Length: 193
Image (cartoon, rainbow, N blue to C red; front, side, top):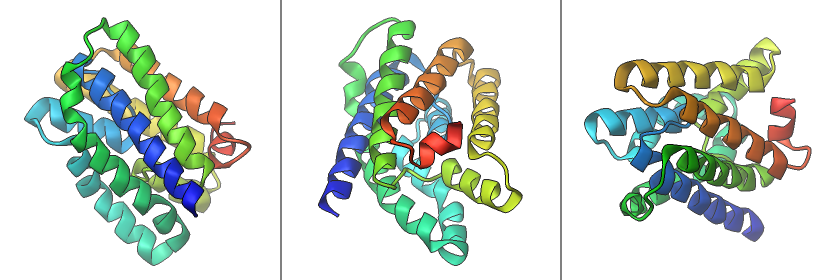
């Protein structure tokens, strides 16, 4: 139990540093609920962590009634990572670098954070949790569903606020690769392959 908590804290720290230190200063996107939270931040200045919690509420209410295993494995990661994202928001002014470096470093950090959490069967939930529900009900590959959600978010962000499509796609790819590399034949490894 203690190692799960440590993984959640470390994963949330890496995730938050990647988002606040590298993605936000360069107006780059990640996929999933985090990507939607970033779009809200770029348009209206909303706090990413709080936005993620609010957008995830319907998914977690659904999980509470239909699959408590998904609920309990996601809720702690959601709350801790969202807290750190808003707490570390000021680090956006610490790192100044070109978007291509920020995409690589930010994508790797977010992927490491997600991978550390998934290794211990916890996650930030959100659209990944919804994708698990859909995959389970329709016997589809969860990785394919996540890819569809991420593509829609990336295209929306590009169209609405003009985020750099290529570098944001690099972020999403690196997050996926780092997550797969850090999970030992676990849920994420099976999800993508």
